[in-house]
Amino acid sequence: MFRRFIPSALLFVLMAVLTLPVLAIALSWLELGGQSLPILRQMLQTVLPEYALTSVLLCLSVALGVGLVGMGGACAVTLFEFPGRRFFSWALLLPLAMPAYVVAYAYTDFLQYAGPLQSWLRAGFGLEGRVLPEIRSFGGAVLVFTVTLYPYVYLLARTALSERAVHLMEAARLLGAPLRRRIREVALPLARPAVAAGVALALMETLADFGVSSYFGIQTFTAGIYKAWLAMDNRTAAAQLATVLLITVAILLKIEHHAQKRMRFAGSRGGRAGAADAAPTVLCGHRAGIAWMLCALPVALGFVLPVLFMLRPLVAGWAELPWGQFVRWSLNSVSLAGLSAFLATGVALGLTFALRRQPSVLTRTAAQLASLGYAVPGAVIVVGLLLPVGWLQATAPQTAVGYWITGTALGIVWAYLVRFIAVALQSVQSGYSRIPASFDDSARMLGATGAGLLAKVHWPLLKRSVGAAALLVFVDVMKELPATLVLRPFNSDTLAVVTYQLARDERLGEAALPALALVLVGLLPVLLLGRSLRTR
Image 1 (tube, rainbow, N blue to C red):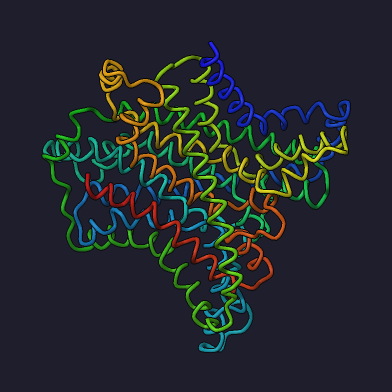
Image 2 (image 1 turned 135 degrees about the vertical axis):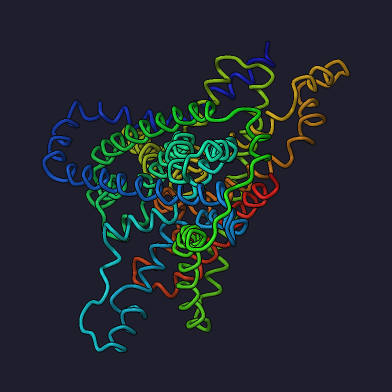
């Protein structure tokens, strides 16, 4: 009885940790005896329409951009054969390594009025004034989000197309359908659910972004949350904006789950065999050139050019770079990311093991709550964690909860766990899905139960999945900006925070060093993902 109580108590604690931010935001509407409605009415008359309109227009523009670019790249490398196809099949994933705010800083440094490109154009052609449009604008934000987030659509659409599209396209060709009709009536319907799921994921990242919207001066919900909390010192307004953002993200998450379910009907178990028998359509001449450009342009805009733009000021100011501070920033980032990755993978492994042994309602609920964490923006998590701290300090000023949440690593690690435990859980669950249940039965017959079953049977088969989970959480924590910016302990800046602060102060040359370090770290899971795609 006591042994059963301990896992149940741990699961209740886990559920409380994961649900506290969302629960606190929901309860904020009851704060101060109903004074939330006047504040909301004032927001509706002032800033809320602008936040809503800007966020909607941004989402629509980004959805169109990532859908076209991701679907175009997936169709090119899956359905056709052209020079460079094998290279682009994994190179199109490279922009995943680039945080959107890093790409925004790189383009701003190179394309702004005082940047090298406009200065060269004015000097070389005798032009006066601004030569190019302002990059720090709504259109610039759409460009940045499109070239950094299209891999979500590309990856899912490529998976859907590779299952059945190739041999169905071959069958349509034998029936006399021209290439344009084959793409329109065969490839696009098969990839539509995958495109919808990828677009939903990209839009969740867009809504959760703070670095690009803040740096470009775009009034989105995320930027409004931070302005209401930090500039206006109005936690109720911040919580209500977070509620609107959370509802929007929940709708997108529902769309993504619905699209993922539909993707199961787009393929069949025999699809891969058929795809292996049918060869992609060979392109020649100008068609091959169009396919090459279709793949090369997003890779150049989303990865190659931003890296080159950051290398220029890095090389120019090499002797003046703050290497001592860079080492301290790196150690802070690595320590926080390492601790968070260790805790997230440990909790994910324990939760998945409990779910496999006893799939009760409690364990399934805890797993579902953990899976929702990645969809919660960092700004919402920050507000959800700091609201209870404010309530406790108002009712019990002598309590030290505020210090432990904001003055130590406890608060920021808590936010990381709520945000990224879903990443670890998905990877560990994927590893468990490849372990037959008969292994557990055989191990129990041989006397292995409980921790012995996990250590002797599951762990040797799960080491690669757990390692991948730890790597993914590590990289996500290294790049996380909104939660780190508010909850980091005093005098413990990370690479992401320093990159944002230096870029905000227009010290883009100094920001290149920590930005490139984040890109190098982000390349690790991208290269592993590309390797797994090449081995299929």
